[in-house]
Image (cartoon, rainbow, N blue to C red; front, side, top):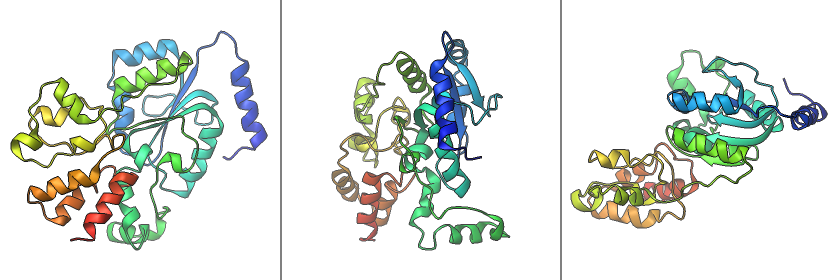
Length: 279
């Protein structure tokens, strides 16, 4: 499956040489639940509009299959969790002008990255789950795409926000560097005039350290944020953890707030370790 470097370069050269042709897009799946691909499909009319602007050459969830095609934009969903995936992501990168990691699994390892903290690596998990673990070919860790290849743009979320995806596509196609909203979720709550569940109700909400993108969905219904969109820019996780402690959470519970969907993200991982040592 692994082509020579010259073959890969030639594929991109042929792509660049095309004239008056629609840009080519691929959506690749690695270790994930398919939720971010479904965000594409559930976009409905927006996806039909995108199909008029670009040629979707590989998107297994939707039909087209050409995993080795050279493309202008490659979207990658999922973490790198197996030896095959570690090899395949190299081929995807080599055949793509732009590579965009899509969702929590691709940007921070996702839920499967919880196994990274297991002293036995993947072995302990597979032996506990599978009757014949010897047939499971897995890496000891589940890691973000950016730890293996260059990523041009990261779109966080569990699942990703389809509006952000289509906005990024248009910007990339027009040669504009994509602008990603880096506000914290609290800003989104204020814009929508939601009552702060942390201040008003004393509920341990991750909003102050979480990247916006979901539209403050959980706080809109009086629930606390679970940090689905990962750590925001310059998150003060230590301060928020102390606030949780002040609300009466035990150190173990404080640690668990940072050890969830985006546990492999450095800011969250560091805070989890700090409070885990106290429990």
